[in-house]
Length: 307
Ligand SMILES: Cc1cc2nc3c(=O)[nH]c(=O)nc-3n(C[C@H](O)[C@H](O)[C@H](O)COP(=O)(O)OP(=O)(O)OC[C@H]3O[C@@H](n4cnc5c(N)ncnc54)[C@H](O)[C@@H]3O)c2cc1C
Image (cartoon, rainbow, N blue to C red; front, side):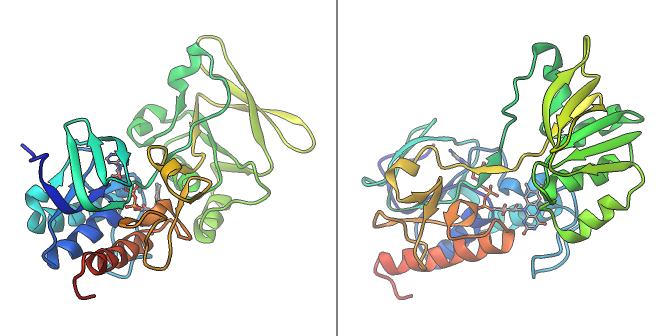
């Protein structure tokens, strides 16, 4: 049972790469740290990465899940009961350094925010009879999609990875990007364009869903015309939004991304932030881990310890 009277040196919100990196460094420096993570396991978005990770200079990881297992191992080894999983932060008073969770209030001398990104949802009205045919995650449906045509909306890594993955199962995969080009990594865009099961459209937007009892096709529009795409499922890979709704109004921010200085300090003294949610920043694992580490150093200095 957490001691809610206790004042921690640092309360960390989010157990992704940024949060765990900061926690490990704070712990190694002898700081009294607690990590609040709403999911049942640490790792954040790592569990969503279906393909290999080869842009992190600590080895090759076959998938995000593999990296997450390693992160979890090190977190369990060194942070043990410092991590509160299944603990959702529901509100916070950053000036007072009070973090309210669904199990009680945590207080800190400093607060570190690393709540990462969440999936962006469709802004198209989805009729009830198609509710099960519009998906945000597809991995678990792979087998049921075997031999069927599907459509994917999105242009980033997630959309293209999903297309490549499902092309091994589906009869046809159509990918629709709103912009003039795909934003995903050039190597996977090239793979997608050369794949004989995948058809890629740019400057195209889905405007209607069609079908009787379930989805049969979608109507899309590009600069020249409307066109119909046969599909039994529509998969949305629309990008991500920063999970900052709970606290952005208390801090200087740039369209929801928390503004930080070079020490990852926010506009409130003693409140630090890192990872995907900060501006300027970069939504990559290496940045999350590195910025979490840098923030730990700044927290140490703020608390009067040597850098
Ligand atoms: C499909 C996909 C592929 C990717 N591929 C790569 C790649 O190949 N290479 C690469 O470098 N990066 C990749 N990324 C990006 C990378 O995963 C992120 O940049 C990184 O995970 C960001 O770490 P973070 O700690 O800032 O946030 P996150 O990993 O998002 O972690 C934030 C944590 O905060 C928790 N949280 C949020 N709100 C609350 C709350 N209210 N209370 C308690 N806990 C909360 C969340 O549950 C989560 O665990 C990919 C991402 C996706 C989705």
